[in-house]
Image (cartoon, rainbow, N blue to C red):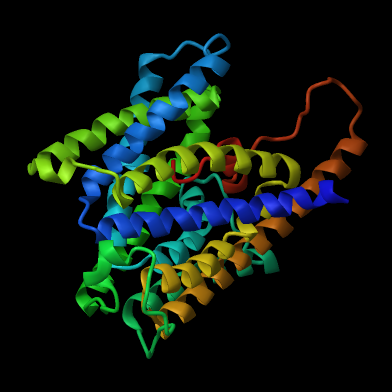
Length: 369
């Protein structure tokens, strides 16, 4: 009985950990920490934590790393991790933890759209699942537009003492200007586009270099170097690089160790037990947890437009996932039907290996490394 409930408990823990990431990151940025320095320290911590584990578990079985594959991994790290995190952290500074959590619902949708452009996916507009998938993309766009351009009345809990009050007091209770908010929403969506590119092309790279942990550790290392170059070019004040025993250090350690280490393992375990779709459909839990926590702990003011836009993003996510699941089930039924009509010729599975966003996520479930 308890064994069957473990995946559900695991996904709740995963999304609570991601909620902590958004809250601590926002608190550190509101406390004056540079976005570029934050990304560098985060990636450096992740590299220090992940590299020994990867070498211990996969060094002996890892295939040779060719120069061509290294260049691909370097570019993937640059755009999919370094640029994605820099842009996302900058957007978080302009907006809120709740918005960051809301836009995570666009990741599967954007990934599907990019896979469609790369001809890894297809849409059959003459079928109901195909129409629903296209409608899901349109609904997600509508949700992002609603968050950006419609605010409506503001909702605020009557809580006057917050956990990070001493670090972000000047930012509490303040409403960002329309220009700043729209810029932040645009940057947040752009960072998700970069991250979706990582998901799409990561699956292709893992086919030539299948050592997942070593590949992830190498990307973290390369991202550390890249983010350091960006940070040292843009942040010249030595005081900006100081951490101290405060929320900055906690945030860096949490994102580098807990998010990269613990959530990576938990996501891989959940996908193994229940499949990638199960994990994807629980993504809105992050939004619910973050809205409640940010209002209490950070004193964030939430607009009605953000709530409605978040609901549209969730609806669009479910539309795409529903359509994809129906099409995948139909393909499985057709393949099973064809295989029963063919004589057995080999022990190898002859099923065509089309790469889909769900398969890409299953191959490397490490999200927000």
